[in-house]
Length: 236
Image (cartoon, rainbow, N blue to C red):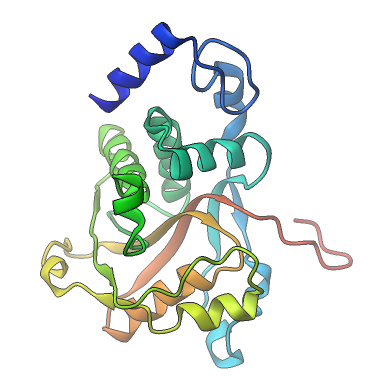
């Protein structure tokens, strides 16, 4: 219904593409096609992690770098409530998840901040994850969302913080929601998902929290991630 409403609004209000500004729809076909560029995304060698934890850190698969059209689409969806973008973001996340293996996948979204749903009226990442797992199931994969994490505390917004400050801010902010653990399918690999990965502090805290409860995390997937500058002699 949300997607149908957005489509009707596109027709009646002549919306402009949030990525390029062309009049016609909330996201034009050319921009939609340009978004999905799957690659293995290393989060700056996890420099925010203690050395004894770095060996267990997982690489992240993202569908796009967090710039240009992808950045504008994510911001429009997350901060301005353009829910008609949920399908394309869900498709991007589905591609990232599928790149991690053959499944079955138990998809664990980063829990929203306490006031996020009140401000936005919806758990935007949850909506993206639901769409992604739905597309995976339609394609024959075994995938479902398991909201295994909840917020125990709020570390605040990360904008303007350094990698070390972000890592310190999120420490201890998440907890296991025991009510949903029973939904885990036997043999399912946990996949932590987020919309955007920058320093990796938030997704790593999610991984740490899950592992501390004896749960195995097989990978991390995101819609987009910031590029890490390549080390001398290294090709990304």
